[in-house]
Length: 128
Image (spheres, rainbow, N blue to C red):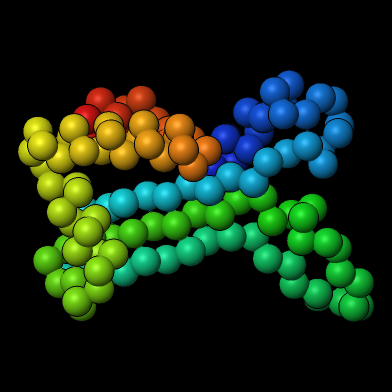
């Protein structure tokens, strides 16, 4: 949540000026996690901000608060035969071929699909 919040706040002065918050772009932060306990393996979780009416029935448009979407993908050896988990495991093996594949994926995803792939410098140094 912290990293996605920082990405959101870093848009000030770039995507919007002053208090023109309608210019904020939604952040999608995807984390792929390896080396987990057996209980944690092969799971995908989504974290986001939702509105809950505690008193009354007034609702605010979700465009005012639905600005962060965090997905955690926990890999492992037990894939439940899902294609996406098999693909991610193959792509994220720790060898030179896969490091090159990740760089190619980053290039194509940003160039053709307008997906900015960024990671904290510490993670990039550890993983790349």
